Image 1 (tube, rainbow, N blue to C red):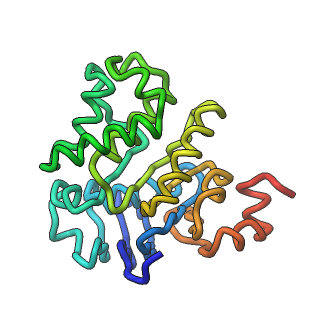
Image 2 (cartoon, rainbow, N blue to C red):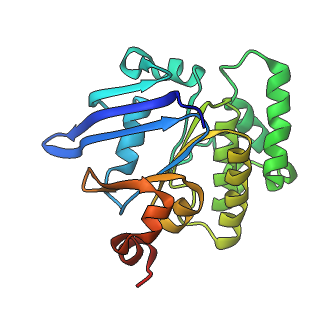
Length: 239
């Protein structure tokens, strides 16, 4: 992990009309870290990632590689290495697996590097390799999730934001994604992981924040979260 902050979130507020969706959220992510944000449905996890990606307006400051993200377009942020894999996956349903992956690299000029990353994704998710020519809409939900993560990786991220990557997936698919995240972490990729599945987040993140009703209620290391009675009872199901 580098001492240089890759992403800095300072006192971020988001409003949807009169609804105060995020209430002064702050977080710093350094290179090489996996940082998790957990909390119940509706807590504001997706809103936070959407704010970072430039999909919603916000008050406060978010800096990526030291630059204020409000001075960048969404495309500029992507080209700078900020890649967001949304909960909705946002695949091209009638495109093949291979075509969807290539769409993830649309802003990259180094075609040799793109080819290398294609093979990396196929090695990371062998199911995708077996289904290179299959249309995305005909795949299972788990396979579509692998494809969404693979397409995000084709953008050559410095920071990969994953929103609920395990939601609705069978345990066997979660195991595949679990192994993929471990490998990506071992290779030094920085990941910001938003998850309702607290056990999954705790298995990967070095640091976590608990978001409830738009506010960070608890922040600390994975060990601190594992030892916290409230977290254990409310989010892990251990009494």
